[in-house]
Length: 319
Ligand code: GLY
Image (tube, rainbow, N blue to C red; front, side, top):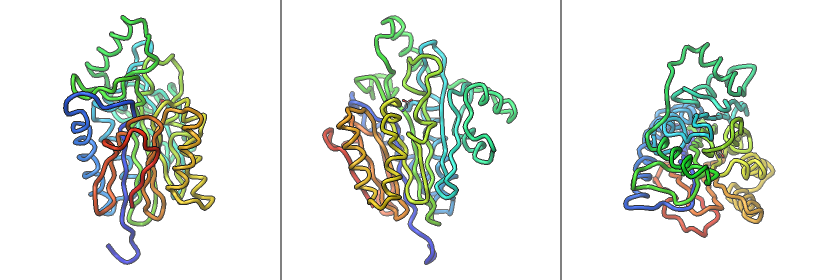
């Protein structure tokens, strides 16, 4: 690393939930997260910019069927998969995203394409048109586990309001309805930040429901800080959580103080959510109001995760 370069930093998440149950539950999730952290961190070390590293991280998380984004996305109430994703580049402070897109492997790729477009957030019909223009191959992200989950819920007359956050037969089951999303935040060697977030939504929701993941409430970055959220979209939107944390950093609070204050407010308001963040100085922070946050990070010196983190803890940090 030359004198003008900074140590890259990386944090990723695969959702949040009420508990990781079953034999080997945490280990299975940890393995997936660490594999992705290592691959994306090596790109940052090789000089990739934050935006490209974030897109690659999101692709890898979307391709991991265990997480609720891309392959393995939950089904909506009518049995269809509709996904949302967003990308924000902190340097250009530019947001792009797609809402409720279907039949594509990596929704984050559409968000990436839209970074250069005059119209940067497209909903279902517009996203389908974009896919057609790009000649993107038709892809079905449905997995057997997610289908079984939906069939079971249909038999139970959709008594749950959401699907499980992690799909893993007999091994990794979150005991209550989930808050599945994936997210990546990176600081590159030039000191630039970026964030990406992607989701299949809550699962079993009504048609047309819009997720926080493709809004600045759930995915936001400036040159000072970048944040990706997970949890119940409506709660994240009500707190405008990602933008709230970033604005606090811009106003002079440290990242960990911004996370702490914002998560305390969310907890006081009985919200159900989690967030991961990095600032321009290389501080890494995370927070949750639910019991488990499925996150892993790379500081340049060590890899760590939040899987065994206390159920009561509100925020944590590394640097
Ligand atoms: N946070 C993902 C969703 O609620 O759609």
